[in-house]
Image 1 (cartoon, helix red, strand yellow):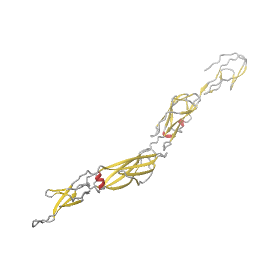
Image 2: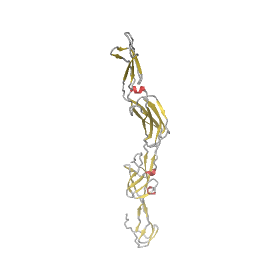
Image 3: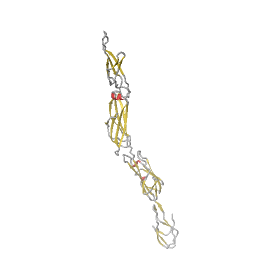
Image 4: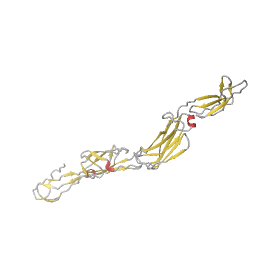
Length: 347
């Protein structure tokens, strides 16, 4: 309040006025003597008047706005966040609510915040205001009658990813259970899942068996939304003797590639290793004579020795037979001898 000290004036009509401050609204003049009409005061000789005018501070106006940057495949909308201002007059709401749009608030300092951010969006701490200065990233000070519009931007954080799972199942398992034996039939499947948070398109799957060339695998679709998966066409492989002879494992790698919404490549691979049955080399030998009896000195008896590969791996040879009477035989096969195959020697 401000008071002007008493002054002696001539009788007559006076215009009352003041210089107002920004952010304040002036009321009507009141006087305890004289004749007042609006801001015109008429005083007669000898009258003494005290005149008063009241100035009220104007409410400030504050608007909170949400900006969402969905570049890269985000799907959130601005109303997914709750915006708040804590201060002399607390306000809270979502984008477009009357509670946070041109809200009348008392002058003072407000702390701005947000809550309820969807997953995969970067947390934001810096507000941008027009009509007021932001301090510390999230505090704004409003004077009487001031208007501020404050916004905060949240940006989608794309995390594209594919997960490939290769699986092998024996549809024919003739020897050691769960291990590759000759003529076992192995069925392979490839499952591709979108384990990221954006849609992946142009998906293609290739398969490499035992370090060979990549073979395209047929899949039911080329696009997967986040969380979706597909199983690609299975194929079968019959175990060969060469693979059993090599031992170790049969390694099969599937690779899936695709594109995220920006066109960047996304890929993953998985290798399924099937153990080969352990080598179990074995030979059997059978000796036979071409006659059961002999009648006289000088008769010739021919002996035949049959050597059989009774194991599960190819034997390289050469093969030698030692007879306790005839000694070493030199006409045996040099090899190789496949499992189940036989060769003969004679003496």
